[in-house]
Length: 99
Image (tube, rainbow, N blue to C red; front, top):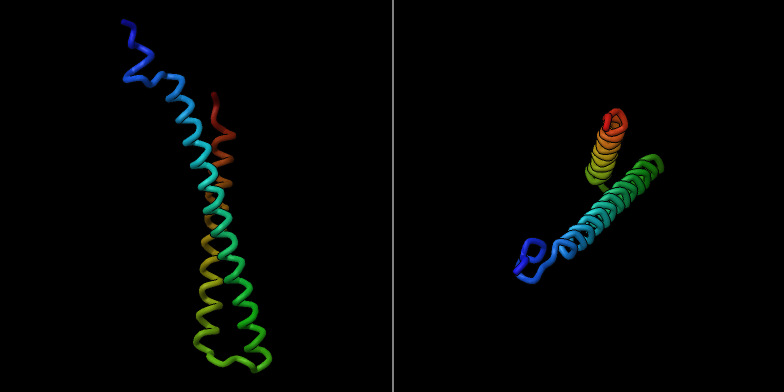
């Protein structure tokens, strides 16, 4: 009885297929999270611009809420820039890696 490649009815090729599917799913999940974060950052930027325009025209109802919207947008943009910088640095490091 040869059970080297087949443990409990699961062959090694089945495990490789499952691993490949899981890697694709995790990659898709990462891209969805990234898109979601970018959309959220964009929404915060739009709200911030609206708050600034309202302050400039004197139509602001609550100065504190406008300041919070601007602060959230600024923090979100800084975070996205840092993520971009880290990703670029990682990409450059991979390019310098010798195989």
